[in-house]
Image (cartoon, rainbow, N blue to C red; front, top):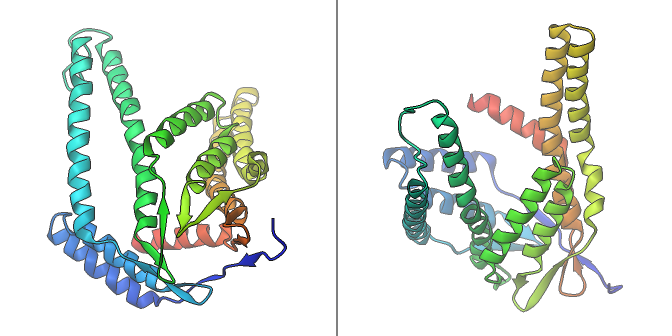
Length: 296
């Protein structure tokens, strides 16, 4: 890496009350239009947030429109309907039906299997949509008059995401860092700013440090089961199990934040531009708790 490394400091200077008013108005319009306006609502909010963010003193610009998001949604719904129709025809051919009353013992197991197959069949489309969503946002983002971009590799990403998700599931989450790192690297290595290429550095094993609280949560849950089995006391076991679940949930948030921070700090644009993130998990968790209570 070059000795002339540069850091791009991004700052957000938006007004909280103005953003609240914008969110409130667009939410009401979305409610009145039975959800149709949400594409324009999201576009207006993105435009405000992008324009309220500076990178190295220059504002970002979002050029997306609500109409193209709405048209994209219609295309996606059409493709999904046809795709699911084909899946249901295949299931029907093998005698698996989703929405029928069980006529014999064990048919509900077949229905559960049909639901599982349908969900697994939709997963590639979900992963494809995740890649396309980032590609769309990058293609509609400009900074200093130069547009960001991303290669067309949605289906390649989808199949990789399926493989790594299955791997993480089979190992009960032990290989979650491998999945997080490899999928982010796949995306980052296909991102551009003008003619400058992004690359993702670092090692996936470094993400295990971010999983500490997840491991603690799992240990507490396992401990609660041991307490219930050895001490024959349900109360203590339930209490420890509840604490373990909360700890694991918070640990998941901590992992996502710390993983994001590590991956961001190991991105490079071109040959000499690196990035740094000061985000803290405690800030995210506090904001989520307060926001949930206020909304509730």
